[in-house]
Amino acid sequence: MPANIQLLYDHFDFIVVNKPPHLAVQNEISQQGILPIICKQLNIEKLWLVHRLDKVTSGILMLAKTAKAAAIFGTLFEQKKIAKYYLALATKKPKKKQGTIKGGMKKVRDGKWILDNSITQQAATQFFSFSVSPSLRLYLIKPLTGKTHQIRVALKSLGAPILGDKLYGGQISDRTYLHAYGIQFVYQGAPISIICPPSEGENFTQVETQIIIETHQQPWSLNWPKSAMNALS
Image (cartoon, rainbow, N blue to C red; front, side):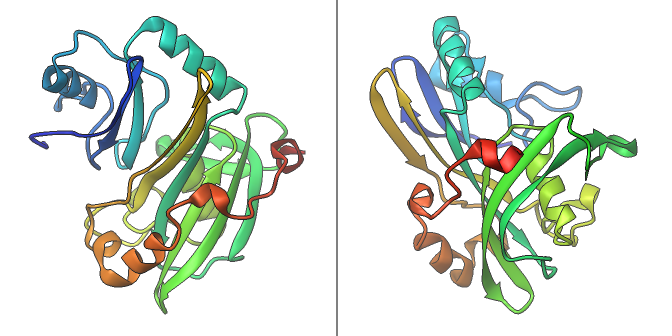
């Protein structure tokens, strides 16, 4: 368990932290979650979750300091006014190197999800990918929806499950290589853009991967498709 959670941004109404991998957001039977750890670290009585990250995912996590701020963020997420960007690594060759992955999310056995052709639980995920080495590819990902395991399922559907993601058939590694890298939104009239490069995992921190990440420190500036509605149609 980390001795100190990295604080990325401290606002009167909310904070943004760098969640380590392997740490759940809320308490589990065998492990304390990140919420009580941060409350104790910052001497804050209570924090509100405004979005979630899987236990295996590291990176940007926002927490509201008040119920009112949490409600504001709830509206911003519902109206798709908060853009999130992720990084992932995979070892297998994808069916396509960039584009949009969309479909209905369907839960199957063992806690897994799959994409199908249904019109319910629609998910859409945009991505670019870059070659790190002949056997490793970096994905820069923008989810347009916020479904459970959405990015993990999307890359699995490309034939390129995330490195270390045992649940979805990724090659065994020291961690699941999925990281919440950037976030951009407007809060009470103020534009806010935050990035958090990954700092844990030998394949994230190797020089070849870092060089590519450093060239994309403004992920929102890439030529992403402009209409979320088109992606979901």
